[in-house]
Length: 489
Ligand SMILES: [Zn+2]
Picture 1 (cartoon, helix red, strand yellow):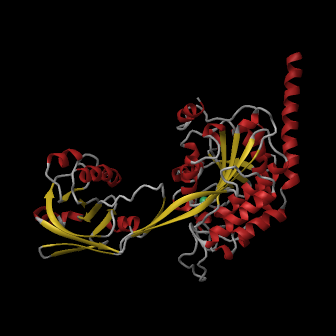
Picture 2: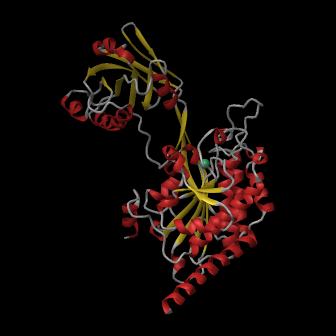
Picture 3: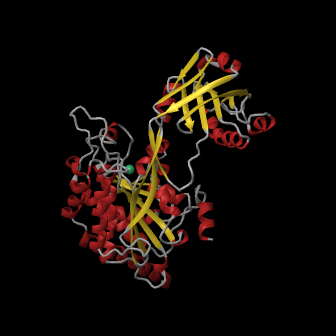
C-alpha cells in the first residue's frame, strides 16, 4: 500500500512537471513570431544565405539581435555573440596541360589536380609501381616527377585509393620529388563522375596552416588507354593555371542562459541549427534562382530562436547554450569549428538538441533523427505527444545516413549525445525532393498550422531535456557510447 502510494505520488509529480513546462511553452511560442522569423530568414532579400555572402551576414545580424532581445547573454570571448570562423575558398585551376613527346593531356578531360596549385615545370620522370612510401624511399626521386598507378594493388575501391594519396604525397615530398602522377582506372567511379566531384571550387575551414602546394595528379586511364604512353615516358611537362585560394571569415552566433538550479546549471544543453543555405544557383522552370531554404534551414533556425525566447524568459534547471552555425551546406564547417573552439568545455555540454530540416511529408509527426539512441527518448516522445503529434525516426530511410549528415554529428563525434529534431518525414521521397535544395523551398509553401504545433513540440522537448532529472546519455551499444564515456569520464 505504502509503495503504491509512493508510485502514485511520483507519477503525479512527473505529470505536473511536464505540464508546467507545457504551460511555459504555450506562453511564449506564437504563430505571429514564428511566421515573422521564417519569412525574414527565407526572404529573397537574403539571397539564399550562402557561405559567404551578404545575405548570410544580414541573417547573422538578425539572429544576434533576436538573442539580445530575448535576454540571452553573450560569452566574454564573444561579446557581440559572433564567433569568428576562418574559412577559405579553394578555386581549382581552369587550365592545364601535361605534355611529352608528341602527346598532350588536358585538364579535366584527361587529368585532375588532386592537390597543388598553379605550376609550370618540365622534369625527368621516375616510374614506380604504386609509389607506396616504401617504393619511394627505395628510389631516387629527388627533383623528379613520379609516375605510378593509383592505389596499392590490394584494396580496389577508388575511395581507398583517394585515402592513400595523402601518405604517398607526404613520402614523395619528403624525398624531394616535385610531383606525383597516378594512373586512375576504375569502373566503380567513372571518370566523368570523378571530374564533377573534384573540380570547381570548394569551401573549407582555414586553420591557418600553410597551403600544401605539392602537385598530385590523377590521369584518366580507363581501359588502360594511357598506360603505354606513361610507362615509357622519360621526361614530361606540367603546366597548370587559374587556381587560387581566397580566405574569409563568417560567424557562428553563440549565447547562453544560465540555469536556475544551483547544481544542474553547471551542465549545458545546446540548442543549435545551421542558418546558412546554398545561395543563388541554377534557375528552375519558373526562372527563380534564389534557393530560399525555408525548410533547410530557416525552420531549424527558428526552433533555436523560439527556444531562446522561451528559456530566456523561463530558464530551465540546466544552462542553455544557443548556437547558429554557418557553412553547414559546405560540409558541416561551422559546427566542426565550434567543437574545436567551444565557449564552454565540451564535457560540460551534456546534450546537443540540433534542428535541421530537409523537408516534411507527414504533419502528424515530428521526426527525431537519433530518437532511440539517447536516454532522452521517452521524454522526447512524451513532449511530442503532448501536442498531438507522433514521434518518428528515420527508420524508413536509414540508408540516407542523415544522423551523420548534419551538425549534430560534430558533437556526437566528441561524445556528446546529439539527435536532430526535424519536421515529420516518414520517407525520403519525391515529396521531399520537390523542395529539397530547390528555389521553391519558400515560406509560402509552409503549412503554418503544422509549424505552430511543431515549434511547441520542439520547445517543450528542449525544456524537458533542460529540466531532466538524470543527465541524458547515449544508450549502451551506440557507436558514440564509448567516446562519450571517455569525454565525461
Ligand atoms: Zn540543413
